[in-house]
Image 1 (cartoon, rainbow, N blue to C red):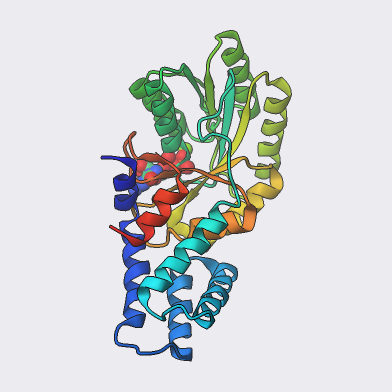
Image 2 (cartoon, rainbow, N blue to C red):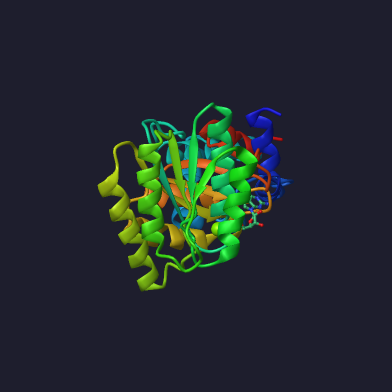
Length: 303
Ligand SMILES: Nc1nc2c(ncn2[C@@H]2O[C@H](COP(=O)(O)OP(=O)(O)O)[C@@H](O)[C@H]2O)c(=O)[nH]1
Ligand SMILES: [Mg+2]
């Protein structure tokens, strides 16, 4: 399956909610009245585009109507695609697979969003590209998290640096960066605990880890936030808090396959201007797609 098809499959639920919602508004309506704008607002907010983006879209749509665009589904779709592309183009990243050796990527995010699974998938992509990969089990809170990362390491052919449960995560990260430099590893991927962003002490610990890594580094460094598309507007508030604590270089949105609210991706990029690097579309190692604005927008509207 090519990327366009995979994206379309991953976004099935979001597309159904969005485009069916939009089409139903215009069916049998000879003109646009206030009720239509209300319904449209409801559909866009329902897709988790957020109030700010929705209001901007409605204004843009009203403008195109005034310019004489027909008030039908096709012209609405055309205008929405343009606006989405404009928002998403506001945040770009040099390359979804960072260069330099070792390149270190720190994965942060709350519990259960898919950090460990995503690390496994990213590691698989690097391995397929012939790169050496080292994993660091920085989630030392649970023995299960260390075991889960080890299984991914075996599956994709990457060594894992770990310490016993309860160990200081910063020292795991420090050891891992040292090992990556000594072993001339291409990519070091560091897992972290699913610390709640509302817990100040845990966020401070994450910042400490970040400072120690940045100081030790010789190559590129990426701070990547993993977000669960299922959590909708909650994902946006997580993104704001993590971005304030550590300047994020990218975001990975997981579980697009389960979510009908993939529109959240647009409101996150609009609010933070941080690029989406990948989207997760399932639980296996192949279910991670490099983000493409074109593929995403097409998949939102066409099968
Ligand atoms: N459907 C789906 N499930 C995912 C995706 N990414 C992760 N998961 C599942 O989400 C659950 C939590 O993932 P995990 O990596 O342990 O989250 P962590 O606590 O952030 O490390 C697991 O059951 C994963 O298989 C995805 O893109 N799609
Ligand atoms: Mg984990």
